[in-house]
Amino acid sequence: MSLINPAKLQDINPRHYLTDVLERIVSGRTKINQLHMLLPWNWKVERDSSQAKLAA
Figure 1 (cartoon, rainbow, N blue to C red):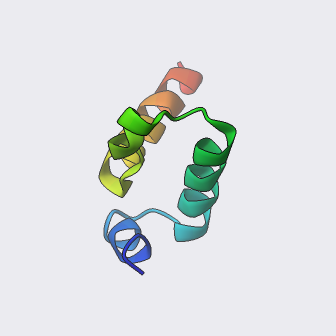
Figure 2 (tube, helix red, strand yellow):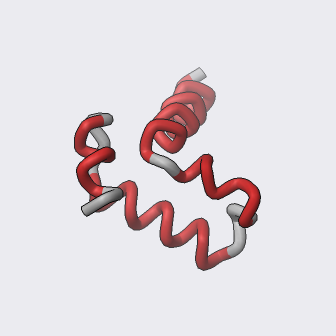
Figure 3 (tube, helix red, strand yellow):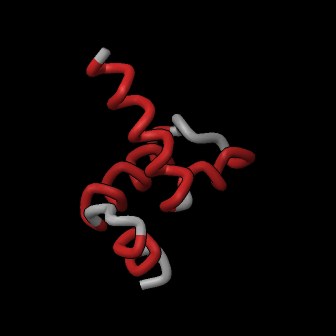
């Protein structure tokens, strides 16, 4: 719940968020010193910027 509620407050689909975060941790794409980037508010900013790059 401590990850789901902040995700909902950021208008993030909790299922998509948790799926992506867990995949990044398990795969090793996100290093231990970068875990703060997986917090919902940072994750949303990164996702939005990567979607903007794809649209351009």
